[in-house]
Image 1: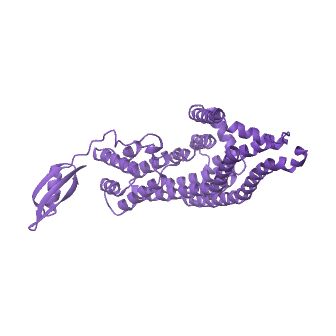
Image 2: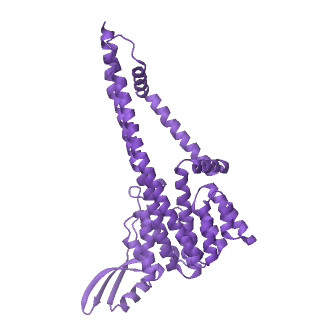
Image 3: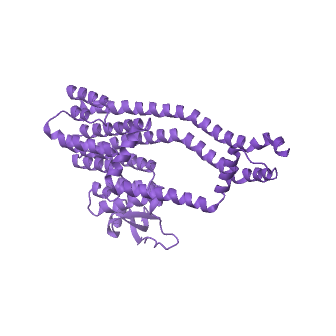
Length: 409
């Protein structure tokens, strides 16, 4: 789409403004149909980007917040339900979006649509921002001719996923904040308070108690810039190695997945969140008439955990044998037994999509209960941890004062 400035006359009155159109001829025809006469058009050329105002899109600078994705999907869904063509809906959403990365992405997709590409092709060029579940839902809606229905279900699913993420962040916010504060206080004491006590104790000429000497040694160690640099280098090397192995070495990913699922509470949260997402996705796809095999193919993408990926892939391969879906899920240990039992009920009643929706709701509630329980356990433990850290440091610093009389004698 191009942008044009126009000057016209309508009912004897001069008017001016801007209009979007594919060409100057299309712009004139559009204005004439609206009653404009004596039309003068000038194309608005896009400003060339200099090195000073160039957009930075690499790394985190080019990402789009999940909240923006939800808002975008909700707007497109609402406009399509109202009967607006997809290209016009995308153009309108682009003009209403304030996030520069979102605006750029929507504009690029609109240009792709105008060039004759399908909606799913336009979305697939931006896999960085739209995950495989999103892309498959859009493609399924496009193929079935029920894009507005699929977008409505996609909005519902994204909102529930956002609620799950918000629950996890809420549970971690308090302990992470306390740990950061504790580390900050400890660093301040080791670099500012302990050296003062150290100078004072050196004048006593007595041997320091073990805990106090340990605090003094830690203070000397942390004030050495070389040590701090080595710690940062080690942490970065560990992070980079983990990232590389996770991306390219599948046995390492599988080992990490096994460990994650066996961690107390954490493993339970991962299982419940994954089952809730997968059940909701399968319910939406089956209700829209997508085949079971295609549904399982899309369902594989709801989790990055290798255990779930392999289990769902095995179920997809065995579904062609004619075995019930509930039995295949029951054979996989990574899935809870309650999931297969509830699926069996859906198979007997013939309402699998409704049963999967109920399963998703059940596991969402279970997930919320686990997260709330985790928060209840972590908060007092973190308070005790902070108290012990600060208390031990203070007591260790004052130990020599308690025996100051012996030192002076």
